[in-house]
Length: 296
Image 1 (cartoon, one colour):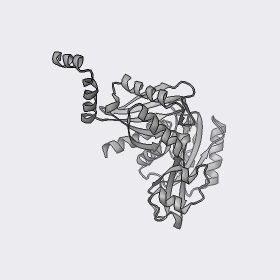
Image 2 (tube, one colour):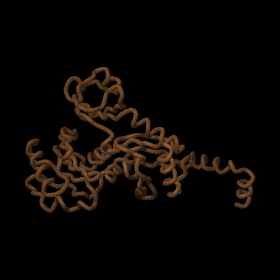
Image 3 (cartoon, rainbow, N blue to C red):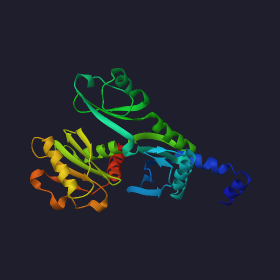
Image 4 (cartoon, rainbow, N blue to C red):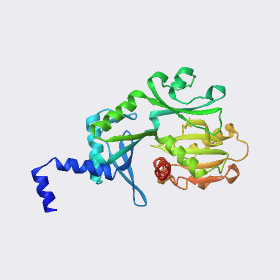
């Protein structure tokens, strides 16, 4: 140790070299889930996920897009260092904010044979979303049925802003995924085909959305007007009745811990089995899919 200390005193650059070597020998996969008012970090340690977060000052991030890459990058790097994670050893997996992406389920002959965003831009389907295909990053998610294709898109400038922010912090970007899609994958894993039809009620940032799926494919995705009981329950029940699935669907509520037990208190089992009642937040559900990716 004395020799190493002497070398560090004589050659200050050795610290940077040692950090780079540590990064090569022990890379750490870290999930970054940003919001406008908070950053969440998650990394696997031992037998579970470690979580850390920091409240962001105003005007660093708005509508999911970084506004000050220098300061935001420094904030991310400082948060990592506080947890004993040096930037050279970190590989970031970015979970894009819920409001930053849109998705659509394509059905029919047009969906057959789609393999990439290039195919989608050539086809130019009417998706009914605010994104322009030419100015978006697009991803196609394979579905079990050949005549279905799930398309996820985000604004190109938004994604480039996050890439630039991570570069400012000297962080390596390993993967990008939408937070809602990662949670959806976690939900599908947890369900394992238990319900052909599923009602998924999602709370995030105080807002609620309702997703209705059949055979593992999301058919309906609606932002709800109500934000609290009993108006929330009434709105959801009416929408599920209008959807009118054959048989009784399964129910899954994903929300913060303060909502645990709220839905179960008045849930009618004749409407279908309640599989989960706010036992996990959206981020926690997304982490279950990331754990599967880690073990794969």
